[in-house]
Length: 281
Image (cartoon, rainbow, N blue to C red):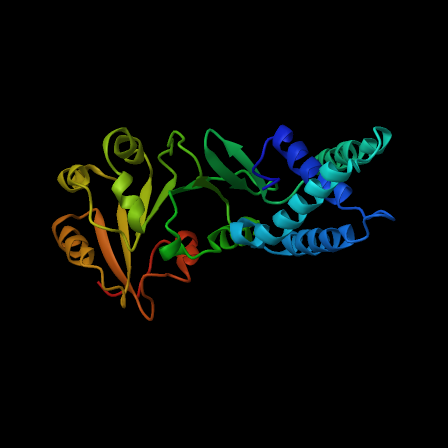
């Protein structure tokens, strides 16, 4: 969340956590506040190492305890002094300053930037000759951890390519040396201006694609070389359409991946090595 937020959002998020912890500090008259404090500390510690905080129901118990603390503080007028509020404000400023300084001094490899709605990953040690564009990644095809596989590949200095992942509505601008990866339901986006921009790419890699749009079907011969990859255990009926298109168009190839289904565990290897000599047509 901190990576996705603006600096104002980061400051607000950190301040919210510090304020919750600050208000749950027990006093001599309200020792039971320690129960709420312990719950928030445990919840926050676990959330640092997992993605559990994105499940709303896990916030219920900490939220109810915090609400009880606020009700008790209102009822007994048991609020911290004005100077004490320097703790959450000062803590927020210190944490945000540390994040800014560490982020400036420690450059990651690969570099990850957000450009015009696309998350761009590139190796800082090389000048990428090819950019791989992932149009709305379908996690049923690429897996939940597709980002980790991309980072692994971009860390390799022998792989001279960058990756651009669709995150928000951004302009698709591939060049004639770039690769466009289309997975699963992302096929539905190949219409209108998006299709025209996609045609400027050097090659397409379609991974278990769904039915082609009518516009794509009618202009398939005008598209760049298309490599359709299909898991042999994937039962989707769109396989028949793509096999037919491959038989009728010289720029379309259809290849089966053995021992794979809807999910293609080694899809990243297809980007690095686009030609499969032993693939079944």
